[in-house]
Image 1 (cartoon, rainbow, N blue to C red):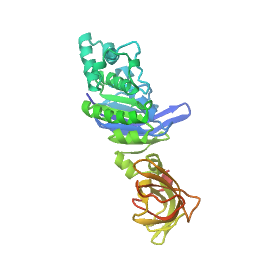
Image 2 (cartoon, helix red, strand yellow; image 1 turned 45 degrees about the vertical axis):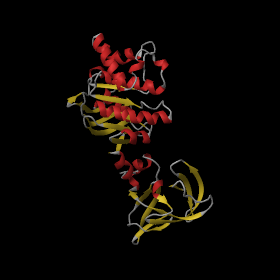
Image 3 (tube, rainbow, N blue to C red; image 1 turned 180 degrees about the vertical axis):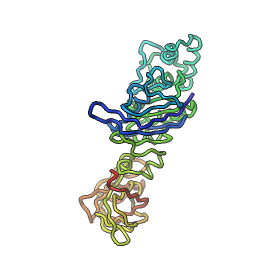
Image 4 (cartoon, rainbow, N blue to C red; image 1 turned 90 degrees about the vertical axis):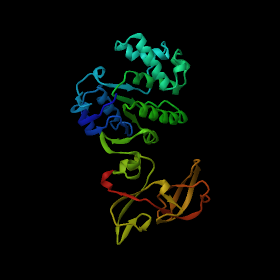
Length: 341
């Protein structure tokens, strides 16, 4: 089962502190949405309001067209999966997955069939009799996911579910999580502060900051066409230079730039700075370099502005010696108003 979610002018206050400021968000049925932002941005508060663990100070939450604003968590068509998984250590995997069905009064035979079906979906049917302590972290994560989906929620809420896993396992589980979501078709709302994770799993990313939505769009839209300086800087690395109009071009700390006159901040991704490109950034000295497998991450000091650092990702076989002076070029410039920070 699946349902759409409508978050309508939701605000939430903890005493004098406003955690959410008039948040509006429409989530389509079957969509994988990621709430992304730093600690304290309001993403977990918003997830808790959708799940019914908090009531908004103002606004409404509709699920499948039904007003759920004041409905208790147990009576909502939602299930929440937490980072710690909260598996029962004394129960088998089958019993853990079937626990929610047992609480709903589902008979033993039907409960067992559903639990085994869910364990098979996450590749653990052959371990149904084991206890959680006999599993790896990734396997425990799969059991928690199977348990959450066993009760057939319309909306699955995921609160940093991969945060406890190491990098390699986290990347593997990102792929599996997305594959399972596509298979079951349930609406997923996933909270994380990890930009790479958000881009790996999301249909749309909701970038949040100080209780507000900065931008909502596909991973490509948010990364390639950020609407605010916060969204630009939070979604990956970004070089940023203040610019003002100067004749037919731009004035910058690096000197004149051959771009259309505008006032604001010139934003350049590290992969868009190199030894060739669409316009020159002037000469710079390579001060640091580190090999990251797919590229060299290089720090350049512009000769015209030695107080600045430019970060560039250069190809595997192409980076100068430390201390070398080169001319840097750039492409794909993004200019945003400074007031949008």
